[in-house]
Image: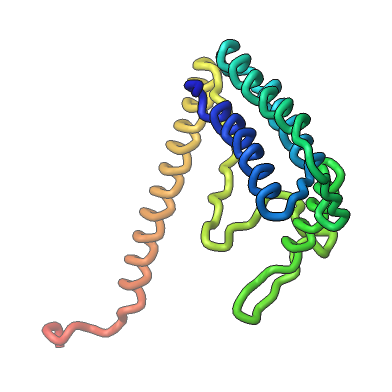
Length: 195
């Protein structure tokens, strides 16, 4: 056998066809030989499609499979026609399989609960929603300014801050003086010691 698993698998399947033919002849004296020939040719086509394998291994596998095909051509006996058991190419039923898969996806569920997915126009638009994770909103992008702009802005900001602080200090001090004066004016009673 070869060193590649896929090639070995196709060769084993081809050799199994020979055993199936022998088994059919022993049991029913008739063989669906065309089906077996088509399977063998399909294996040969698949071996031809393998590109990553060693060319010597591919030639060896094709030689084995062609020997199986020639054996199938030389089988004598009654050929069985099974109209109900004919094999259908996967390409012919691919669209039907895909439609069945999407229909099964739309209606799923278990334990008596069914869900309908993909039946509305708005479903499956945009990003999928994960209800267990909340995204952090993006903060706005701030651009770095040049050093000159930054120094000018910082000096303006600092000067404004200084002016605001001196203004607030003046208001607080003036407010305290006024409140102190008002307290002195409001207290018109004479102290007890002076009586």
